[in-house]
Length: 127
Image (cartoon, rainbow, N blue to C red; front, side, top):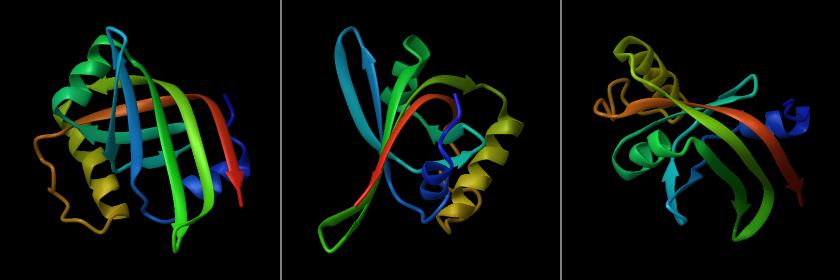
């Protein structure tokens, strides 16, 4: 799936919080995550319930929105398939890329595991 160029520009812009949606046994779970987007793939690092849900059901949703003084400027919603990367070297590199985007310490969230989300469909809107 190709992500439209305008949506890519928005996803690659400022370091915003994304909301990751997972679902297991018909029960949705939504939680905030930091992310990094490049070439149709979203990287996150996570642990706990989000990671457990992804291992059981790799179909996920991700929503990112930019606001100014409570007014939405743009939003992007992605549906995709997640792959857990159980390789410490790849996870450390992914963590560094994400932490760099958010100006965090390179080793922040060292216990988290890398997840790559292959984007299947995208909807976006600017206001």
